[in-house]
Length: 113
Image (cartoon, rainbow, N blue to C red):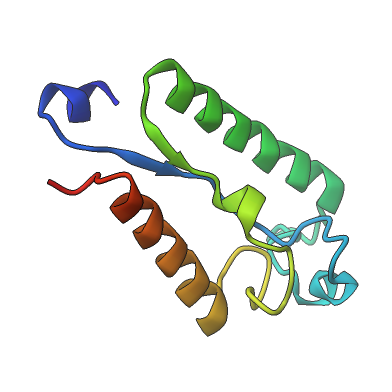
């Protein structure tokens, strides 16, 4: 944040969306692969979701503290296979939706000189 501000660069932070703990699409669980370690350990989906939300909350706090623009994709993107093809990777519709949302956010706030 400091480096971008020192150089007059407009920074936009974007939270990370996932399908962990989806309440809108129970089928998403069947497409998760990041829950397994190479040693075969299965990580709990609720704990992964909690950890990602902690990271996203930290980003939200940093953005507020330093007056940096934040696009809260994690809050806006439904946890559904309509938008993802696994835990965290967008399918075509998800990539298009995220890209259009971020672009609109940037344009509406005149973040591009």
